[in-house]
Image 1: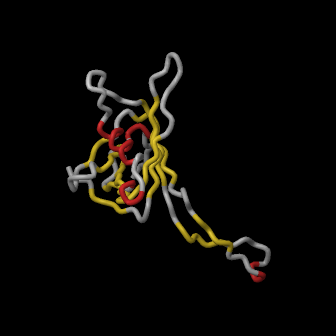
Image 2: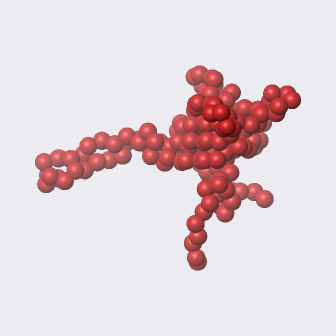
Image 3: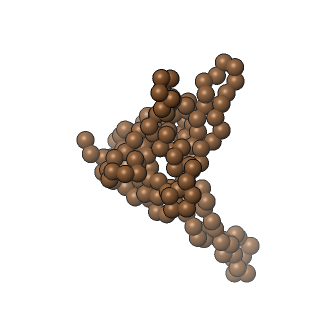
Amino acid sequence: MAVKKIPARDIIVQVHDGETPGTWIDIKGLTTATINPAENEEVVDATTFGSDGHYEQLVMQRGASITLEGFKLQDPDTGDLDPGQERCEELATETGVASLGSIRFRHPADSEWRIWPEATFSVGEQGGGNNDLTSWSCTIVRSGASTTEAVSS
């Protein structure tokens, strides 16, 4: 089997609509998606006198985040945002349990979705310069364990 490079631009990122089970919305307008599988990781120093001067550690907590960046997409007639961006922005205004949403993502060749059943959303700065398109960004931090689900055709 020959392995090949994966174009980052092919990643598919979807947010759950928050109402109907199994209903996912594409987040469009993306130019960058950066997954940090070690976000919020916590370790404990496990070094003892018996470690002979070598550092030892144990991971006590795992975490992950995904940062999405791109262009803000908006209907010029209605003012409506791209539905995926809009759902992320809705979740980013909530607090407590209401601030938790779900995302899933994969590359086209993946046979499974990576799902974060619970995650928090923070929308970043938006804007640009004189000859720029308006930027859009959102950082999504996993809350709890991730799951997977087979890709259905």
